[in-house]
Length: 434
Image 1 (spheres, rainbow, N blue to C red):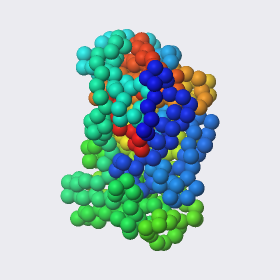
Image 2: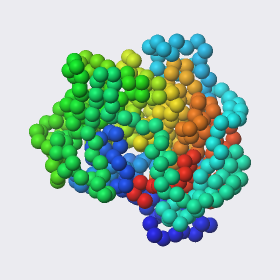
Image 3: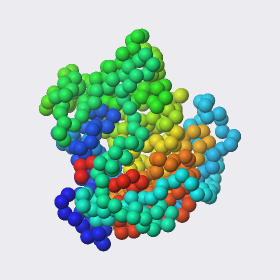
Image 4: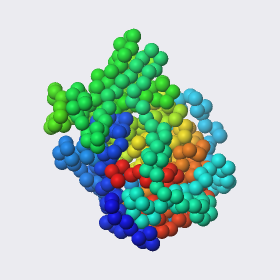
């Protein structure tokens, strides 16, 4: 945007809507590792998440980077559920949900010596390249210094976050999943004439013993320890390829999520989920310890389907609520650390920010941050760099419409930062589409 905003004023509703629309015009970033399927991602209009649903293939392509801006910014009930010391050995298959009989207990998280030095904040128009960043102490809220926006540094910091990978070599097996990329800001489908009418890219598995994996897929993810490969694929009801016009089949179909042994691709995979709405899928990712997997989707409301890949069991992270993402998780997936997941939930009687260790007996940090309703201006972010456990997690909760953000650690006190239009643990400046 070329205009500037008075730094003494918080963004108007029009500004917030403009930010959301701009976030959806992600034409300056390479496509995420979930492949061309995200180019046809649609988000249905709902009470808690507003989004535009593309009516044509071209309109849907423009929504490849749509962000669910979801978070919080007010004090609430903050609890940490302690770990169960009698839990099964975490290296063995066992229950995947933390015990529900342990009541929430207030825990003093103490002070983490290796925490964030500052939080980046911005006032006025966050898309104005002449705007200035203000670095704020996350504990005291005091201003440390100001510095000009560096768009390249902002983009580099986002690209340094851990991301799913869809291609690579595992032992004597090579996986190659073709990616649609941007050429001068334009999605050029001529690069990949083999993309089928269901939007599936070519998946090539080179193995001395053959492969049982599908030859095309909507999304592929290899676990960090090279143990597993997740594949979301469909039997396309119509033959042919998309071609330069981006044509897609008009016949209904659904996708299936499977997990395969990455070192033995000739073996049949385990089905984790069927009847996935294929045009509404987002990131497909693994936890840091490779035990858990998550599929982000937008069939009705935004949600995460989470699985223990050791035994295929599904883990309920929704708790009968609408589940949303945290900032940057549409590129990284919802996982943080080795085995934790960070997300937001709208449960009808209020919104909450949740960080949960999925290992048996793991902790859960739950922070209420506002009333239910439209959340287009709300945002939550977790500090990836210094994360060790839910009870010591650093986070930011923002109400962008009100110009207020809060920084917290565990269930400790929140540090209020007012008069800002955004805040982040990463340097601000690069906004997809802005």
